[in-house]
Length: 282
Image (cartoon, rainbow, N blue to C red; front, side, top):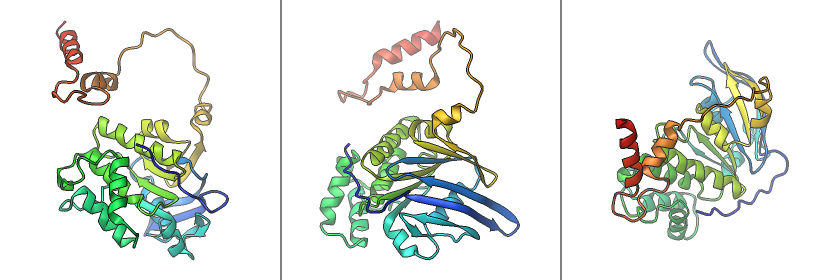
């Protein structure tokens, strides 16, 4: 899958947030949040449930007004230039926003038409190809797996080539193989020049994807940096010899295979299953 480069006209950071605050009655959700996101990078906003991640994304995507502070997206103020912000972004929420009655291709054509783009059919076919959904394109989205549905959702978000995309918990509820598929799609977005801000509560997801990671806790950014910088916050590791045991992830992909059934006989990795069965019996 190859995703073409996105053209960014603006200068400076893609996203700038200063002193952002938001409360719901007596509950203070954001308490002075500050961060910047470089253009063409993947920025992970990491935090537990209720930390304020989705609230921050809603403010940045003009769905919610902040109580205090400022935020600029693609150079536009989210409070006073909301229309310009919306033209610069796309948002994929926690749940895939696909119409299950329509086919994958019909979902893409619909969004392209809503954006008043020329040749919506050609746009849909190109995105199906780029996200490895061509064979499933004529099937109803209701028949898609979780990973396929999420990839379709991200593909719909790319229609119109927005320079900035927000992914709110992009792999929540997905199985391990589907998560890897989505991770690959996100990486290729950044390689094509798209700025990605993703929220996640999965530590390994932030570690795998992000150029920079900000940890949001109780409404505040408590640390912000690259993975290498964050690791330096801990004492130096002691070097010890430890025999490495396979992780559950190693076992899972050894059993199912990294790319699934290669020869179409439904039994791509008999040897792995045999070895696993044999080891569990002994």
